[in-house]
Length: 573
Image (cartoon, rainbow, N blue to C red; front, side, top):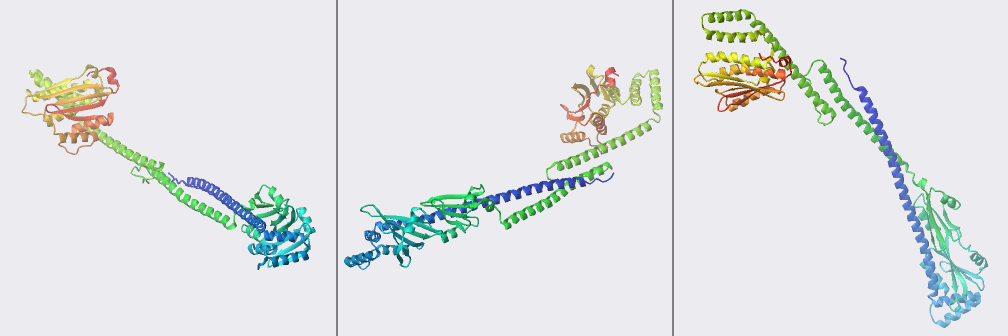
């Protein structure tokens, strides 16, 4: 037979598992890329929220600084009165007022509005300019750090901007504080505090490449926009933008980002995930190739073993891989099957040899059987003619036994078997006259039961060889039968020598395992009968020995009752 190799199975399994691995790895790569993008987007969102909070805090700090300067002015009556006079008087008149007041106060430092403004510049580095505008004279004074003051400017254009709410400047945070006379609560003028904000806001916004920031003044005037002030409104209307918008006083801070861009993985991370997926795929394919090769190798071994069995080699055995899988089960069952087949074939072979030997022996024994049978019959008739009926009776028993050996079939009725036993026992009753007797009992309904020939005679013969005590006068052999379901029990009990317990256990073990005895001194006949019963009726039947009470041996023979031809005829022999 052509050797079979499961190459087709190998490639099918390899391609199938490889496809599964590639699908799994692809799904994992997609998942990790998606998860990395999600995490990156979430991180950028948190960063945008942080930048937004930082910008809000910055604008709030500037607003508080402006409020503090304004409140500090009302906490200093000297500076407030000076400012009110500054708003009321012309520049020359105000100069006279300050000189008169300073000379009359006797203080080393004049506590006027410009002193307060200079202190504000020193306290706030972001403060770039302070503008003071009088409502009464429309004069405007601009103050800058390091005591740079530019008075006498026309404030009407600035007042017009204030009225139109258009006084803000690009990149600046401008706060308007109106000054009222505390006696009349009428507005006397206003102060504009201008803080530089562009550099600080740009620095915050640039901490994240995806962050975009817009700062609006009240009705939508853009004072800061990065990167593009004109497109921020349309960007916010698009669903792909994430935004944070809050107001601090007159100003509104809006921080947003393009989520599509923010979720894009860096090329290095993207290719790292792809590389990890490729490595995992390669490792999976290598492992699958190794695993499938080992698995199909085991299948190949099983097929090769089966191939050897087909050639008649039943000694082949498969290795058990101890994987506790189906292939190990197949290998184990295959080994068990080979062992059983080998035993069965060996047993069948031995039985065939024994049958052939028995046939040869029977042929040899039949060289002159009829001559012996006719001679015994002639002697028996001569004894009867001479009046020796006892000798004639003994010869009749022998003739019956010879005839049963020569003419009867292999399967006879239990009644016939018991009759042969009676004839055999009568011969020994003549031989041991006065010291031996026998007893045979059997229910009438069991007499037609078919049994194989000569199952009791070797057992009785074994008693006369090993068990009888010739110095006794009460030697007895008792034979009886009973039925239980489909099993026929035949009992042969004697009161002879018996056996020791250890010998009895050993003998029963040999009979149960159907071991052929090699000792010529042992009961070969019982072993032969046991083997015949097991060969014909099955391993669960055979011979079992027990100790009889008070002494002796009880031999129990079990055979299967079969509804055969002899049973149907009811021939009792």
